Length: 108
Length: 143
Length: 150
Image (cartoon, chains in turn blue, red, green):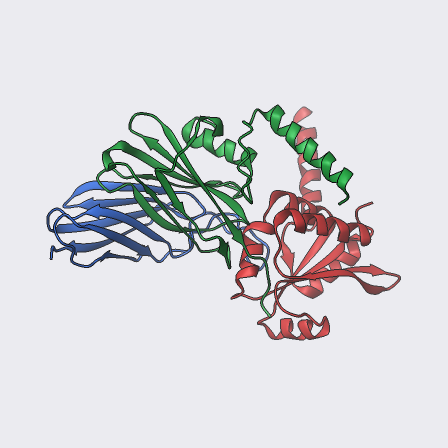
């Protein structure tokens, strides 16, 4: 099942040369592998271990989270606005599931 | 000949593994009570609720800590009681549980269940481990 | 704990630290666990705590108190040009797996924000690998509240 991923920019329309934040939010339990269920059994680890940010098809940032990221995680990045284009954020968890979200950068 | 012995040993181990209950997991209250009485262990009744972040903290980091897990598996039987269920509500009333997470420690002595201690609220791993050791000693399972 | 017992345990802890070879760079942070951190540093970087240089170019922002350890905001920013930062690592001393994340800025600015799980009150470390091979360190501490739901 695809990981639901939402990407947004703040400010939504930066000026050329201005810094802006790119935030990705995913719907994922990020199981650390140390959590016990109501029967006391350990829930197997399954967490997002790869976050890649692409701009116009080129990889521009990468994060490798460990097992201790919160459920429904947030990943925040900062860029400088140079030219308009499309950001794509790709996620992959340790079970092999993937997710993708995109946002258009338009300059003010 | 050697092979025959090996098979025999394997069957013996398998038999033992099947006979011993898994004390690494948690049981419904009545079943846990039966196991604690039968095996002379301390019964830890864990009252939890699904939306309490302090229970989640206990489940994620404290009750799965290797030292805590080893002690619980070695000397205790854990009863898992969700306070959102009708049975959980009845047990909460019976044990006058103030909220979640609550841990009530019981031992079966002279034909009756005796409470040796309890605590309410989440705690760091080292503190929980020290308190478990106390409860274990009080319950006569850690001499 | 009486005074003598306190002195005895602190003395033992200090000599244990000396034996393990940790530098006497006691930061006095709440929730410090250098032994646990050391293993994670070695695993992620092949370097130890003694190889890190505290730097005020690295700004690590953590809340002083977190109501729950399940969702603690973490933010790190490095006051260096993007091209000079190879990677940013975050660690929590007290977590069973201390490494929280490794971030490669590439064309992004040397900034990363996320939300993490903390096992309990812990020191948090941001370790910055610069392009010229330095390892810069910023530390913070977050107290995780204990409590219950009534």
